[in-house]
Image 1 (cartoon, one colour):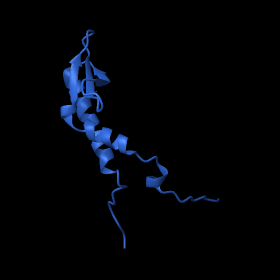
Image 2 (tube, helix red, strand yellow; image 1 turned 135 degrees about the horizontal axis):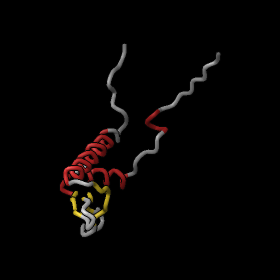
Image 3 (cartoon, helix red, strand yellow; image 1 turned 90 degrees about the vertical axis):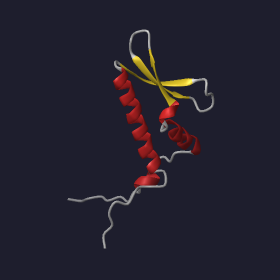
Image 4 (tube, one colour; image 1 turned 180 degrees about the vertical axis):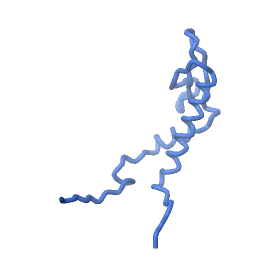
Length: 97
């Protein structure tokens, strides 16, 4: 049986975020840039404020309850906060000697 080992670097092999993407991630990790609106069908829509045009809102998700909508916002904030943690590369969690 033959095994093929290839050398890869998980950080450099993935597409790297550009400055505009990083700016967006920082923007949407602040809860003050979010809102919840109720739609005519009774659902709640989560939206974040557009970076370029502060009068414009970008719709993201629709939920049946206001609690579900707020939970979706909190999950998005957590997700993009984690992405920001790894901008400079992976975290070393353990080294061996």
